[in-house]
Image (cartoon, rainbow, N blue to C red):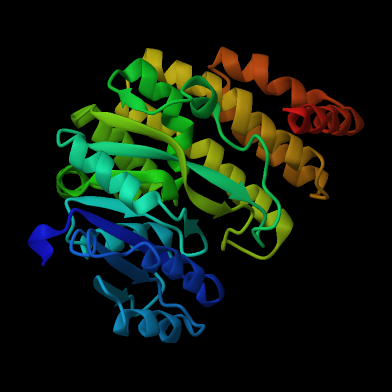
Length: 338
C-alpha cells in the first residue's frame, strides 16, 4: 500500500483531545473507493497528557485508510513534532493539518486532482477560512495579500510571485509539498538553529529555491481556529511569544533563502501587516511599560536598516495609545464593509 500513496495528511498534535476528533471526522467523511488507496493519515503526538491517545485510537482501529500514529516519550517542542510527522509518512506529497482544524468536505479530492493533473509540481498552497475558536464566527479579511492579488487558481513559478506568498507560508494547514524535496533539505542542513516554531517556513522557503513549481489553489481547503495557540494560557505572555515568532524570525528565514531584492519586498509586506499589527496589540495591552519598551527595542534592533519598517510600523510605536485604538476601530469598520 505505501507505494501507491499519493497524499499523506500529517497531523502534529499536543493535548487536543477535545478537537482532534473533528479533524479526523473531516478526513474520514471524504474517504471513498476512488481515493482510499491514495491517502493516509499520520499523527505525531508530542507527549500529550490528556486522553488524545484514546480518541485517536478509536479512529485508527476503524480507519478505511492507512493510519500511522507515533507518540513522543517526552515533549520535544513544536519543531521536532513538525519534522517527526513528515518522517513517519509514506506519501509522495504531505499535507499538514492542525489537530484543532478541519478540512472542507470536498478538499481531499480537489487536492488529489490537482496533484494528479500536474505531475511536475513540487508544492501547493491552498486557501483557508478563519474562524473563532468555537467555529461560530468567521474572521473577516484574515487572508494576506496573496488572496487579493491572486483570486484564481494558477501556477507560481517566479520568485517575484512567490514573495507575495511568503507571509502566507506560516499557515501550516494550507501547505501540500513533495516529501523528497523536504527530505533533501532535512538531510543536508543543520536545522537546530531554525527550531523556532517556524521550521516549516524555513523548509518551504528552501523547497521553492530548489524547485519553483508551485500551484496556488484559491479555494478554501480548511477551516482554521484563530487564537488557539498552545504556547500559554496567559494572554500577555502569548502576545510577546507570538510577536517574536511571527516577526523576528521572518527576517532571518527570508535572508537564509532569498536574494536581497526579494527580502526587501518580503520585509515591506511584513512591516505593513504583522509588525504593525503586533505593535498595536502590544501598545493596547496591559503589559508593563518597561516590557513594552523592551519589545520595541528588539524590533528596532532587527529592522532599523529597512525603510519599510520606518515608513509602515515605527509611527505606531510613537502614537498615543488612544490614537492607535481609534485607528484600529476605523480599520475594523472598513474591514466589515468589505
